[in-house]
Length: 246
Image (cartoon, rainbow, N blue to C red; front, side):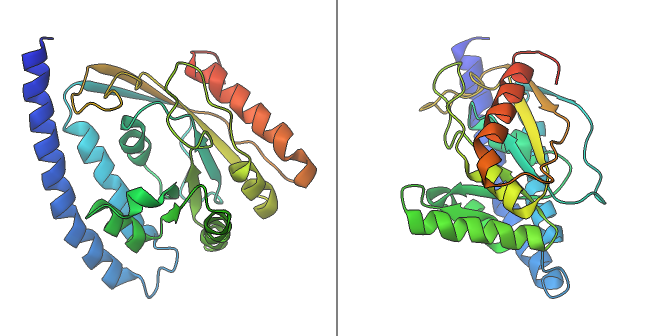
């Protein structure tokens, strides 16, 4: 595809995405007002917000997405989902998965107009990564969401990897799973690295695969098992994103 073609498609996608976000904001707000008093986990307003990601993905004609693996049933207990992080596209793609999760994200994202407002409203969790107090507050907020039966979504690399290799996984997601005794759900994303390059607004063609791996039970594990669990999950995701079996 020529650069001119990508420019035209990219302009269309950004305009369409902006329109969806602007329209989605009052819908999410209205849903929150109608449901928050009997839905303390904010599942309904959260599902509406995150389902908007499906529309954003659909509106981009350059992306083809495949989902492989068993999708958790709504009746199953909550889990801590963890995924590798290659591109801005990962946020829309994981958000389009058909179940509700509360996301841990940078505070700067939560301060964005419209998107950040909706994230705060539906109970997503913002963190200032270099602030220990902020990290502890975020950790307690995630435990609160789990207590209300809602799953959590974390990128354990902390930020997008700039190379083809995974960044070291951080301990937080695995400590959370062990302390709350809920499973880890590993997700492996491949094909997004060049879908929208860092520092660019141009979209590129991408064949993306999201692999949903088998949940990992943590029953009986304690604080001393955090690093072992972390390394095991990182190895599984790394293997799966390269096309290996889960």
